[in-house]
Length: 286
Image 1 (cartoon, rainbow, N blue to C red):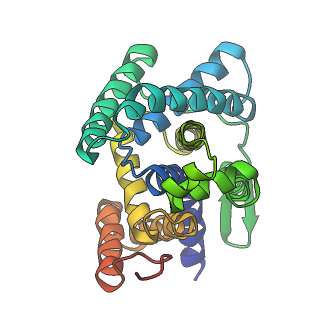
Image 2 (cartoon, rainbow, N blue to C red; image 1 turned 45 degrees about the vertical axis):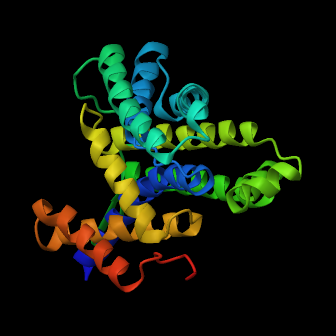
């Protein structure tokens, strides 16, 4: 039982990071209908940038992350304006091809700016919390708290703010939103800014938990899309639930079977859910 609790807690921490990745993908796909494959590369940019800011400015992770998120938001606006906006009214295949090109471009820019070395984002959290036989490293506790705060902030922004109402209006009916005076261009820029800021935060947390390295972005974006499909395309609650399910399932399979099979087990669960409920866990049929 102790081992089970330990693995579930570990899975919730990793799942919270998956949720941050998937949440950014969800608002882009659900609102703009774009499969933004470069999202994982943006996350890695965030991890590298957080590390660089810490080394350059001499600040800790909690101070460097907000600065990196601001830079990530600016990068998101550039991506939307320069890459996706010109093909917004074209065939979906054009945005798909651009997304693949952006993935390679941002990946190479990361190599050019930060080098090919693997880096670990230093954290000030080195203690360990013990609850009987259950051990929770302080870093993992803070990663989970940071992820929860960001997810709650994003959810409140989407559901309670005026701009959030505009974003939901565009997602539900773009022509009607335009007729009601919603500035779709502004909505698109804000969506990409928010999504990229979340990706940067996720990249920094991945760098603190594990490491940031070339090639990691591919795995992150695959997990993000797995969560997106598992929870339901365009569903924010689905992204939250799906991310936690994926993280816990990976942790349990790694703890009780083998870490070599954790990806296989998690995707088997996803496929099983899609076979039984193709619309995902949190979307209504129809």
